[in-house]
Image (cartoon, rainbow, N blue to C red):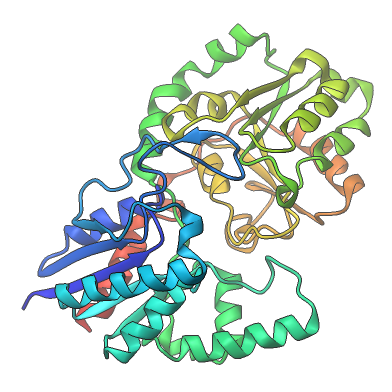
Length: 387
């Protein structure tokens, strides 16, 4: 018997595409993905990167899909979001699915779509990044959020939490554990493995070309450069290293954003020419920089429900230094072999950890099978559909 699954999310996301492709290959399953807008598919400015880009990894290839609009992400909020939600629900109703998998609970486009789909008596499942640790909230705001989410979650038959923090959140909201299936947040491991296989044999050559000595240690930051990512704690921590430690430390920064200029200036003040800022790089360009690096730093102070750059770095064999506000810390940083966790506001602790990283042994390849894989979510969704 053929099962039809509709999937609803705001826009194409490069990390979800392999999940959808996996689902499209499942026997007796037909899927169609409904995107609120086409952000990321056509060149458009990202508000946090501050650059115009589109993903170069074909985030809509390999599965049937439909764009509800060609609007920007901001048009999925407010009154316009309500209008687009009615269009999305009409499109899903025409598709006549047996179930609908929804990603997230906001913005307005998603919230209203969910409520309308409930009224249309669709079976709903949820895949969201929601946790309680990513953001700090005032007591009243937290209570309002809890009331809303407790009601919102009652619309769903099953949940796919992304990690430990996500499970704890759902439990706090009254969701029974029997209605959850853990499916860790994953990158496109096959896509990145192609980069690992291509770039890793060139590691020594690439490092030598830049001037990195065998005994030097390369730190890397990869992501948007704005306040919630907390990048400026890095130069503060580097300042406290000894002169000997600084001499053997390099720093690569991949990304852009409103703090780029200050971030670059302050890191170069500590490391001089050993600080290299390369700007925004698309998915297929990241491998070269991960290959030259030894340790990733992700110092986010809020809003980091997972931190997929950690998955990327681990696949390249890097150790990682993450703050206690990074959602994946409890799931991926299981021991010193993988990395360290520090308090997001503790500069001295970050300095001590960087000092430890500098004297650790070099790159150690990590088995691909030990990393979260897109097929896990696809398999779990499929199992729930045929149950």
